[in-house]
Image (tube, rainbow, N blue to C red):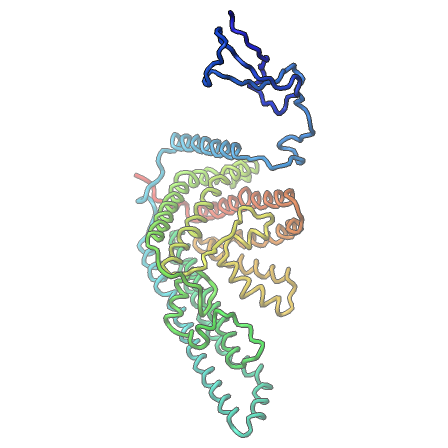
Length: 512
């Protein structure tokens, strides 16, 4: 007898059953053999199926497109990110091949015009500039001795029979006494700091020809100059708090472990000299130990990125800048715009590599050696929703100095915040012009103008900071990237290079 099987046609088993309508229900299938005995357990089979008659509801609810604003969840753009990386890599590889085919290898250490005079002046300036910090220490040491004497006299006065009258007189004379003392100390600090910056600036402008050596010397002098200013201003307020204490003293709690004038020591100043900050404090947060493997990794990163910047600048930026000189001379605006857009990619790569080399690698290595625990040298500036946010996140050491010693004091004196911000950018523009114009021997005001132009950009993007939603952040971020990468840096590099070439020709010696 043939085997009898009661089955249900279950062609829909391979489809998701939760979306199919129930039509016939569920049937169990029992199989019997020819002799009527039940099959073994391994041969027993239960089939759960539903008839499928092409009536499944594919469109059963309202659903937006994945890229629509009404989408329930933001789609993952990982694939597009990978595509952009691949496109960037391939595009730059093509440019590299084209560059090598057109110019050959342009990297040449011996071709750079390193004059003996440049090296000597650079070494001397690097040794002299830190001496101004120790002159500032001597000035503060004298001021601290004067403060100790004043405190001792006040205590003797309070212990005398007429302590109440003399204390009252001291309080009445407090503003004038403090101002007269501060005038002398400020004059000494001002002369010392001015000489620090002035001697270096004049020496670099007139006697150091190579722009790289000159830039290193000028930046070093500017950093030490800022540290001297912070050292003087901070100790001024600490001295005032000691001379005229009050119940409403607002000194930070961290300063309690090293009160004034115990902080006026060579060891304290030396730590501030090497610490990766421009803001003086008697005490800093410290890490427990030095991780030398961490230091080695950061130094290796810094060295590798520096080599990368040198190769990119010599092989790609230099020929592009040289090819742009004729177009600038005849004011061919279309060609200049094309060169700016071409240069923007290279300048962006150099800028990002320089950011990583300095703020991520070099400063972290220095902080680890100095056991400096506050490592927030930058924020996520690449996500800035406005130009103002970028300036608050990009360079935290400079931002903290400007806010603590320029912006906040001016606002505290009654200045409008926008006027105080304008003063900050004007001051910063002067320093950047010194850092760029002096080493290139062309003080043409481009760096200064670039900072002044930031003020209207900040005003334009300021309303975007208070808006909610992604659109305002996207617009502000786009304005930031365009202003810095497509206009600001490439144009400044082009103009300073043109001024250098017009004055000196080339920094490289001809290859033989």
